[in-house]
Length: 394
Ligand SMILES: *Cc1c(COP(=O)(O)O)cnc(C)c1O
Image (cartoon, rainbow, N blue to C red; front, side, top):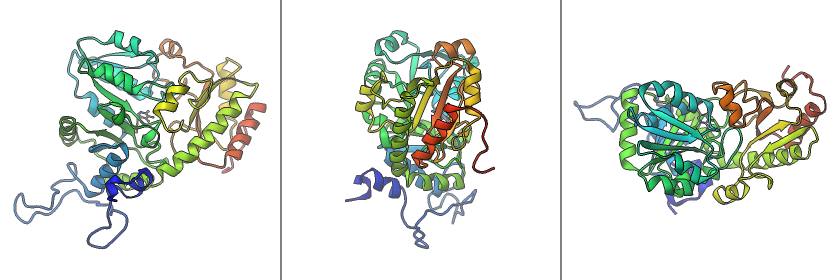
């Protein structure tokens, strides 16, 4: 069996990499160089200048492409740089349709950075494919999907929406950061592009910022490689090395993230101080059946609202946890707790935020891979008496 036919866990460990031919080093070296010697002008060993190519980056791109089942992966210096590269294919007058419950930075980029250049965008609830189709216009060039969504974990039907968009020649991009290719493979469901913030689960250790776009479409590949060469949002070799180290354990980490998040969602749903719980693995979740079809697990993100509707109650709880760290971001081995209204989604105007269901008492958990009993005890102490405690490290 060749490595390319291998199963996910084997690809995660090996794809894109082979022992270094000069030393036998098992890990690809960090090629910390800006340029490459040529024996005569134009005669080189495949690399000329490190903004264009770098062997450590090549290894990462090979690995990420294999995990998404893509022919090509183009690594970027951040998730927003990857998103930006896709959006730069748009021209003044073009229109984007995106979900109204998405990464706040994607909203900011579409509205505040690209809006002034004449790119129009609509942000809508994507639960009903008919509603999505109703906002398509002749100028619509891109459908931007995030599923599960951030932070309400709504589930969007990638196959159905891709089918409808493609019938009108609209490109479909899926931000697969929350699910990861271990749980969901959008290209197999009909998407044209998969975008990740590799900062999150793919890196997995909260120690690197990165992004990637994966595709099977050669003209998109050429367009994106031209853009990264011309606009320069390349990841450094050390960052590529850290990401490669992260993806080797992606399958193991995701198994534990899913297991812990499932237990925490069950616990929260039964707790009297908790109102709604948002987790696609719960039978009460409106997207549960679709998630069970579209994903092979329900992921590590859980959001919930307290029964107390006030922002104050939420803020008090947020500063009382001992194992869950109060921080933005997600997808690392450590559990994080976050307040979308004042942290990750603060850039969305309040009326739009509330209309999208991101209320003041909403709390988002990125459930890590710690011992789940410690996570449950931490939530128990803070739900019972939400006052500030000292962290383990202090
Ligand atoms: C973090 C995140 C991004 C942006 O990625 P950066 O690496 O922070 O630039 C985009 N989409 C989602 C879903 C994210 O969580």
